[in-house]
Length: 195
Ligand code: SF4
Ligand code: SF4
Image (cartoon, rainbow, N blue to C red; front, side, top):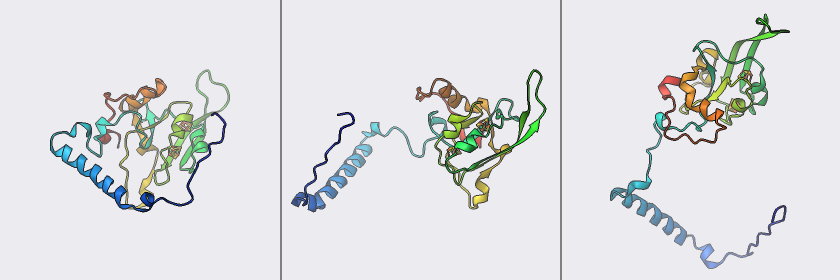
């Protein structure tokens, strides 16, 4: 019932069956053993993919490391509005902007992005930065294997974050389509290509 209160009835004392944990354990073993032997006997049709997934098989809705989109491979689309830095829950984005001369036909003061940092040791992969970006300048890439011995090595700067839009096409297209398409079957950029 919408808005209603659901009453959960719970017996005060555990029944004998609930107190004996052995049957539950045996059922668990039985399920695992059945799966194991079925996979040996060629009945592994349900095991669809090896883990970890090949980066090329990762669907576009995978939220990996956030990166900066560049149309020419050198200049970020980012306009330095800092919305991503403001919305980021752990505050791991830092945007450096400087005043710039307005372009032809533009009024007022323009901004140019001088620096950009994401501390991947603190990133939650929530995707809020991507959602809030008004310039489609930030995208969650399929890169998920990120490790370092030193935390400082997990702070990625503007140069390291720049990724050509062509390598993020599956993700960008999915976003354009409202994120509804699961896009399995479409190729996502290879991990080597975005690292
Ligand atoms: S994915 Fe979330 S936590 Fe990571 S940088 Fe973006 S907003 Fe911050
Ligand atoms: S929200 Fe987008 S345009 Fe604004 S600073 Fe972040 S990446 Fe740049």
